[in-house]
Every structure is written in C-alpha cells, then in structure tokens.
Length: 420
Image (tube, rainbow, N blue to C red; front, side):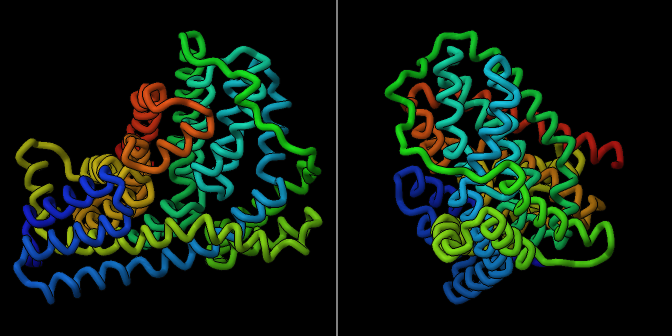
C-alpha cells in the first residue's frame, strides 16, 4: 500500500505535539495541531490531511463509547466507598510489617477492577500514608509501591488503554486482559523489591500534616465492595468460557449498577454515574485528538521505514510492538494515548508480519507502561500530589517506574517467543 504522508511529516507533527504538551498546551489540541501540521508537511494536501484526521478520530468512537460507560463502574466504586474498602481490607490483613506489599497489591487490585490508575493511586494514598506514618516508611517508597501496583493492575484492567488496544487489534477484551496476567505478576514482584529497597534510603517522611483529615463515613462490607467488580469479570469472562459475548459497553455499567445496589447507595446512582463520567470525559476527548495524529501516522511511511530499520539492524519484526508502545507512551506521557497510537499505527503491520494480534496487543500494552509517567503528562503530577511530594523528589522515581514497566514488557515478549 502506498503511503499518503512522508515519515518526516509524521515525525514533525508528533514532535510538535510533544513540544506543545510540554509547554502545557491542552494535550488534545496539541495532538490535533500536530496532526494538521504533520499532514500538510508530509503531503502538501490540506484536504487529504483533514480527511485523514477525521477518519482517524472516527476510528476512536467505539473505544470512546466503551470508555464512557466504564465511568459508571469507576464512579460507583469510588463514591460508594468500595474502592477504599478493598484497599483498607488488603492493607489491614497484611499488616504494617508488610505495608509495602499491601499498598502495591491494593493499588493493583483497584486498578485491575476498572478504576483508572491515577484515581487508584489517589484512592489508596491516604491509607498508605497513614500506615507509612505509623510504620516509619518514607514517601518515595510508598508512592513507588502504589505506582508499580497500579502499572501491574493497569495491564489487567478494562481501562481506556486496554479497551483502545483491543479495539485496534480487534481482539476480545477479556483475552487481552488475561494475556498480561503473568507480566503483571512479575511487575508486582519487582515493585515490592524496589519499593522495599527504596524504603531503606533517605527520603521525605510522612508527617501528621500529610494525613487526610476527614469526617467518619460508613464504608460497605468487603463482600459488598467486591460484588460489582466480580459481576464485570464474570460477564466479560462468558465469551472465552461459554461463548456468550457480553460487550464491555454492557458489562462495565452493569457492574457499576450492581455495586451501587448491593452497597445500599442506589439512590445516589445518578450522581455516582455523573462523577464517573466526569473522570472519563478528559480521556475520551484525548482519544479523539489521539485518533487524528494516529490517522496521520498510520497513513504515513513511518511504519514501513520502521520495519526497514529493524531489518537493517537484523532485528525481528515482533520487536516493533514493545518498542512502539514504549516510544509512543513516552512521547505523549500517557499510557492510553501511547498505546492507542502504537496499536492504531502498527496493528496491520504486525499481524501481516506473522505476529498474533493478541500477542502484539499485549506487548504494545505492556510497553506503554515503561516511560508513560514523564513530567509532561498529568499522571506524574497527580501521583506526586497524592503523596505530597515535591517535583524534584518525584522525578527520582521515574527510573524505578521504568524498571517496573520494562519488566512486564520483557516478560510479555518472552511469553510471545515461547509461543504461549
């Protein structure tokens, strides 16, 4: 197939978008403007550029719809106190001596059941800081435990990034989630090791001023808290187990409704859903902007030049998947945007090269967690703020986070090589 845009044009557009994002311009507008400029430079045809941008954005609509409905589950888990209860029980059961492990597991599970990774960290942070203050853990070790656990849970979750990758490769969402089960486990283990080592180094300690002061509020029982996520898992699991397809568009809000019902908060379901929607509107709009530049990159010669480069370096084509996930997520400082651009751009090339769609999607998805938390993205600042850390200290965690993401990426790639 003949490319409509040059590699140079696509790269210039992407670089422009990155520069604008770093300069604090709205990421969606940055991506749209980058796509426009890159398309014009790469083809010299304004009409072709705009049509390709519109086509790219249109390809995101099915993902956006599923992501918007996933907000119902996230909203009910947070507003009913279910997410907090799950975290509280895990931390209390494992105890203060295993606080690092408890914090990591709690964040992983909350993220894995459908709460976005930044919200998962924010949800667990008050509990983690309270435990840390009593047990004498420093902030960097606690935050790394939360971020690493969140990264592990993110590649197992029905979150926007997973939905976008499954849509791009046209694979079952549940199958994609299960494909990264082993990589997520290894990421969790590395998280616990690194966070434990970090706890023995100098770092700002948790003080009483860092602890959240709030009025007592009733939380649901642990059983009530987990029923909603369990319903989602069961509904999504019907396809591979029984051949019955329940689309995430149905399963995710259904789990949210059940969560609200069993927690006795059904009267507030409308507000819970609206809260959840407010949390996904930003990422939904971002995906539309992502679609415009993904459309330009997908229609450019970049993917062919990338393959030619791998051939020149005698590197196998399957490495395109993890490398694309790493680079695109780093460029956008977003797991969702990076995974989406990589998947939209290289899905056809990877499958044509003989890489199974499920394996390619899993490798891209894992790769998108390596350097997705760079300072030009919101995740970096949201998580640092949740732990009350200064930017300089937060920056020092980036290499540790990269190690965690790289662990899951390497394991996902090994699994592909072993033919599992």
